[in-house]
Image 1: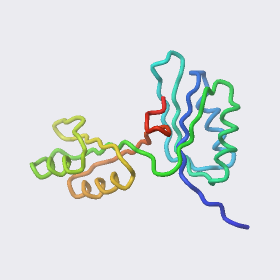
Image 2 (image 1 turned 180 degrees about the vertical axis):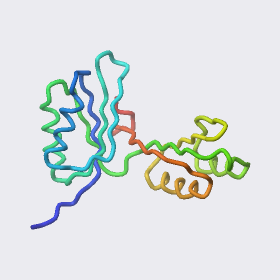
Image 3 (image 1 turned 60 degrees about the vertical axis):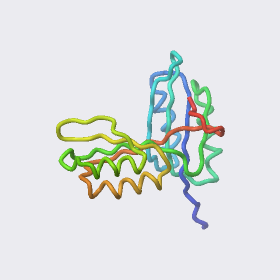
Image 4 (image 1 turned 180 degrees about the horizontal axis):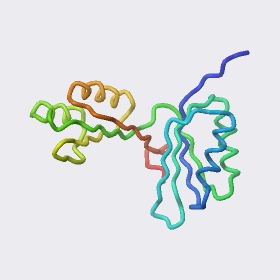
Length: 163
């Protein structure tokens, strides 16, 4: 039996803010046991509408099947599937003990920015493709990196945020 090629897909789902909506959508991924890499649910500026973003590794041939199943869920308004190397937002927490001019230059050279600073930690943010973020991660490991978090950014065919 031929092994199916698993590829990463980003499902951006606009839906009504109903109790149990996230659970109904996630059950579509659970039944065939597809791996979910990240989940994000947020309110939008439209009253009663939420945005659910799911990054999942699924067989390429099954994307349309999942799309159809999700679209059939009552309360789903629309759905976009992004393929390939989509953008991500990364947050890096660093120890403030390593704060010096070289670290500031490093942060600037990678196009990252300082989000917040406390007595003990710095929070750095950068958006970009996974390769760029992995490069920054590797560099920051020797600079007091305490933790990191990646979140996919939904964009449509025109490169605009899908909200």
